[in-house]
Length: 437
Ligand code: FCX
Image 1 (tube, helix red, strand yellow):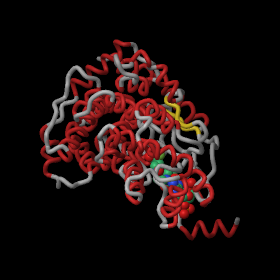
Image 2 (cartoon, helix red, strand yellow):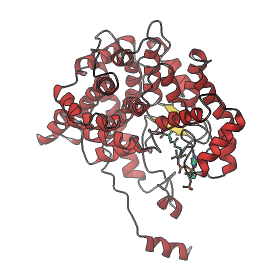
Image 3 (tube, helix red, strand yellow):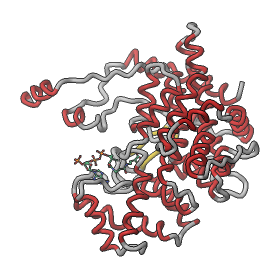
């Protein structure tokens, strides 16, 4: 049994009494109340989910296991790949799951586990190939994931009829490890099949998850670091976002990781969520096209932003349901780009949008947050390195998001979280309560 699994077992067992005590002794303590606006408005800000993997502060942004993004990178610096600047996804996943920084040996074990599990079954390839080639890569990604459900260790063990609730995290962990290991291979297969003339590059047994992904899609250094950075930055954003929440909700019915994460991917595919990174690039390209590929002036840019808003569209990459400042995931990418592509015209345009859009959105007066989110930046770095098929960008998000979602699902099982079942009311009831004040 791997060290990671042993550490997890001990951590979960030590943690479980905290949840049991809270539930039994303090279950009645009120932590929030809900108003009509929240019932109609997507349960915004209602505190009704629990996770210890990450926490999103409206002002400072995400913390993974208590650490900000710069602190996370700093803590994992022993796991930076030689010659690069980003830590391995393997070491980060260990950290997300356990809250501990792994030793070199522990990270190496994760690496070996992933290698053992990563091969994409032929039947997945057959399913992908049966889909129309112009299917959106997110539809292919989701289908590929759900197709592998037949291999779920959780579903099998549950079906055997003697799986104790306190042991459920174990087969969930097994499925999570297999899925994380296979997702980059699945994503790379889709990429090469759809966009690179159906030519494929074999997985390299010597490369870590990020480096191997870069190689399999046909990229060279420093794109391996771009891949590691992307997967880490997109991993987790607490529990209420659509992809994480969907996965948690589906898993709460004791559906396995394949069903759950495929569902999460379907949510990530929406333009208000993960698809925004593809939309940003589309928007930028459209803007450049109108100007015969010249970088616009600030005045012109302001006009384009207003045109977008006036036509009833959102400015993709700006605004957030929880954040109220610039997303530190945007900042991390911006710093990387400053170092590696300072003179890229699209990068300069992204910076110009950052100077202009918050003012326009503030004047427009609707959004509660005029600042950029993660998606405002991600496409431009991909484009620079030659990954220009922008409908693939959300798949990259999806490979990364699995790290957080699946870590959460393992803990959900470990702590025995209940099937989700919020209560709905009728409009008539709302009107009655509105009338009563
Ligand atoms: N451009 C124009 N209008 C915006 C806007 C934007 N970027 N962001 C919010 N608004 C509008 C909303 O559409 C809403 O208008 P309405 O009252 O007419 O419905 C109003 O401002 C209030 O919305 P707000 O409370 O600020 O934001 P929400 O929590 O409802 O929505 C998202 C949050 C992220 C969905 C919203 O800001 C948006 O649509 N942004 C653009 C798409 C995007 O970038 N999504 C990616 C987010 C993220 F990081 C991710 O999940 O990947």
